[in-house]
Each structure stands twice: as structure tokens, then as C-alpha cells.
Amino acid sequence: MPIYEYICDDCQEQVNLFFRSFAEVETKPVVCPLCGGSNLERVISRVAVVHAAGGQASQAGSGSLGAPDQNDPKALARSWREASRGQDLGKEFNEVGSRLEAGERPESIEKSLRKRFGQKPEVH
Image 1 (tube, rainbow, N blue to C red):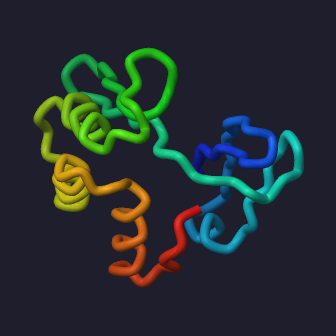
Image 2: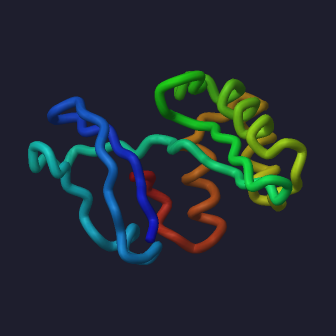
Image 3: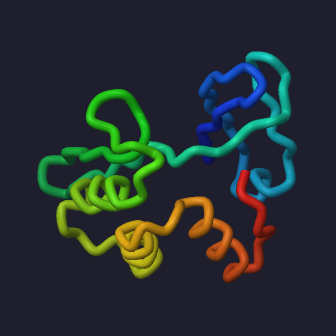
């Protein structure tokens, strides 16, 4: 069940929205559960990577302590790389990391990946 974080432009609060499937993310309108507003902007969520040795988790992304600035793609890429602890998480992860390190905005990356995979290019 996917969970996405949004900032509501109407009430300025950060909210989590739960969806029953990834397909539902594309079709279900997003509505702020706090104020009922429909002007929500999706933000990059914290990612957790569980390592086989000891089951320890490293985290990166938005959040409270030690979170990278969401407006700094390079800081976000560094945080992702640190969380992966050198583990190869696949070509898409590596591509996104490289594009962030080059300074490309997350919204631009998401839009191009959606287009590549035949999904609606708008970013939520």
C-alpha cells in the first residue's frame, strides 16, 4: 500500500495520503484530510533501506532530524547514497541519484520518468 507525503497549499500542513495501489495514485484525486483542499504538492518522502546484516535501517529524505533540504537536489542525492551504504539498488535509483547530483530538480526527474514509463507526466 503506497503512502505519499504532500504539502497542502491551502492550509500549509504536511499530510500523508494512503492509496490501495500504485494505479490508484494515478486516478484518485488528492484531497487534504485536514482542510479538504485540493491544492496539494507531493514531496520527496523519507526512504528506509534495510540491510541484511543485522536488519539495520538507514533513512534518507524529508523528515525531522538530519534531513536534506528539499530544495537542494545534490543534498538529497548524497542522503540517498549514504542510506544505500554502497548497495546497488538498481539502474533507476542510480539514474535518479546521478540526475540529482547534477542539480536536476526532483519534479523534473519524476515527470520524465513518468513519460518514459507511459504514465501521466504531471507530478502530484
